[in-house]
Length: 481
Ligand code: 5CA
Ligand code: ZN
Image (cartoon, rainbow, N blue to C red; front, top):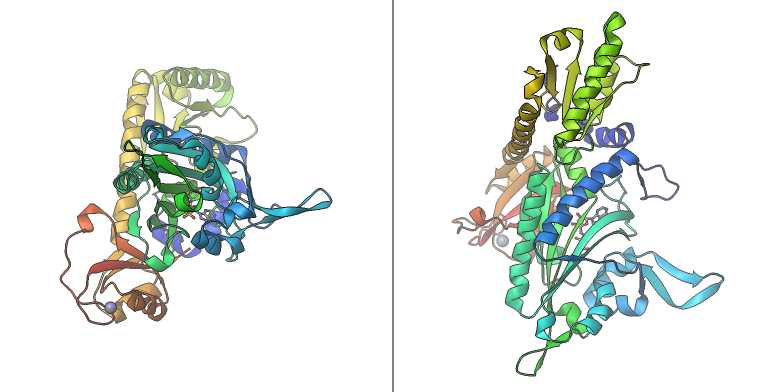
């Protein structure tokens, strides 16, 4: 069995995703409310590992985890004018308490800026209270009007949101950089490739000064926004009167940022690495890293099972998440299929002949390559393989993304590439919003924004793809989810 290329199932990506979520026991989205789903126990373990990675990263950069209420009084939500304009049509509203209509209706949080607002007003007094960097991991509710998709576009979805307050604009700006670095680390750990773009003015977060977004490319040529970092300036601190006293006795509104990752962060791994056999999980987030499968032969099945269990126990002691599949009612082949579907990174096969030779067979999930290994070397060998696996999975993801990123100054070519669902197209742009929006219409795709990666910051020497005036920057265009 050779590794199945992603290009081959790219046409039915949506179907693959929906089917695999159910068959690999990640999420069941058949709940009677549209856009809500159940994380199944196996999916939930992946979710837990993924959120632990982001927790570790945030904790290490001075963020503190907290938990805020779910309900937002309308009077809070409306405080920031742009924010309420962007979100009110997307809110689920609570209008009754029991049988009685509420005097002030409550929104289920679509995000939490207006929940933190009144509390930060109470908490922040002096410059010594700053910076204040908080985050929470909760679900949020958005009445999405576009077609919902399991995990990718939900009406109730998992949300890691960080909210920070700072004394100066420069510190908030530095925090944006830090959040970007944090997300790079996060997606690198997940072996997911991404582009970082500064969203155009007309597509920034409601209430933000600017928005930086991480987008991944799905196998069907559409991008998916998998994380965002927003500089909020003083928009919310003015709305909620969050000020601090400076050493000289004067008061200033704090400068804020926020950054969010949703369940899409988990989906990004499944999408990037899946193949026709199912999921492929990087070892770091796999609930089971190693599945040991005894290959019984005639009357030897008891010896083989015993040896398999013994190996598993040793691996667990050495710090691996390992498991033996001792089920008697199914064949080893059916077991391979079961664990491949669920993306377990390493399979170990052991039969009577292996035991005689004191060795096992190791099979890597990503490449389906096999090798034999002496049992006494197993721990070291697995450590090496897992590290290599993560490196190669990451490299492959980046190669694929770069291969599907195009640069052109020719409008017809850009149109054609979008039509072919080729991937992300970078074109020269004069910077005028009019040109940008017209471009979206002509090409029938969305503008992701201007490249934010350091290596893309050099001057460009070209003409705007639309108006032919001197181009200021590149701009990315893609079909999006
Ligand atoms: N307050 C900010 C940062 S905490 C915020 O709400 N930003 S956001 O609106 O951009 O959302 C953060 C991330 O959530 C997005 O980048 C996107 O990856 C994800 N997201 C947005 N809507 C949905 C949805 N309906 N289902 C799943 N994930 C979503
Ligand atoms: Zn132009």
